Amino acid sequence: MTTDSSEPLDGTDPESVSPDDVDEAEVRAALASSSPLVKQTGVDVCETLAEADVDAVRPYLDDVAALADDDNAAIALRAIAVLDEVAGEDPAAMEGRVAGLVSAADAEVVDVQLTAATALGKLVVARPDLVAPYASRLAEAIRDTEPDPEPEDVGDLVDDRVTRRTIAEHVEGERKRRTSGRRTLVNVAVAVTEEEPEAAFDAAEGLVALLDDVDPGVAGGAVDALGELAKADPEVVAPASDRLTECLDHDRTVVRARAVRALGHLGDDAAVPDLRRVAEADDDEDVRELAAETADFLADAS
Image (cartoon, rainbow, N blue to C red):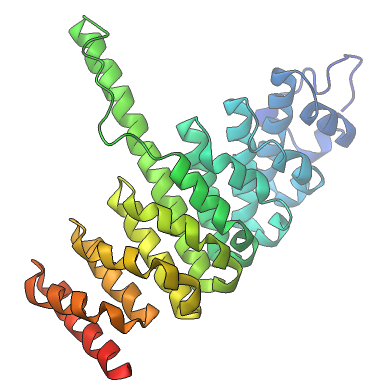
């Protein structure tokens, strides 16, 4: 479809468009437009095309991928939705088009991060090799979006009780979505270290920085990822031995259990005394048993 308008895709209804209805040059022009409204129309058209037939959106994938971290959240969300559809239907088509999703992983807008994380989670299952080169950047994105330990108190800013409650519910909702996005990203990092550990060795330092994360789900995921790296090459994680040992005293059982496993993969018998201590004193029976088994394994191997 062509028009006499100076704006590409003018008059197009993105929700009902089909491949035969659009001109490729117009779609490209819309995606490159300086007008946010025109650009969004272009992305909306691509989303409709992708939902109907991934092949129909292939000519525009590079343009769409470049918009995944657009400053306009509405455009970024639509672009990520297109890439998510492609990742689900034809993961191989995402080769060379992952960087934008990764850049969106530390977005200030919570829903952009969550949507990008969801798309990466889908892609890493089918093609971990496409995500692996970005493991270090994912760890950095998780660290950069760590929320404050306590939600913001708006009580001193707003007098009206109903308004305070509404704002508090909004803040809590955003906090939950942020938590979900960050946990999805750390699970992506774990999946990468399981399937493509050598490609993720440079993420070790960033993962260590997550061991103190306010969210135990993130801290535990970082421990798991470091354990997978240690399984592939203990020397990569050896500098973090003391930090992993400190995790044996984490207040969350799941983190302590994962730390025991990671130390087993690391193979450093210097951890044996701490593992013996955990085996005797931990509050959780399963952790005690795992620590005892791991201590025996490391002692026997030394």
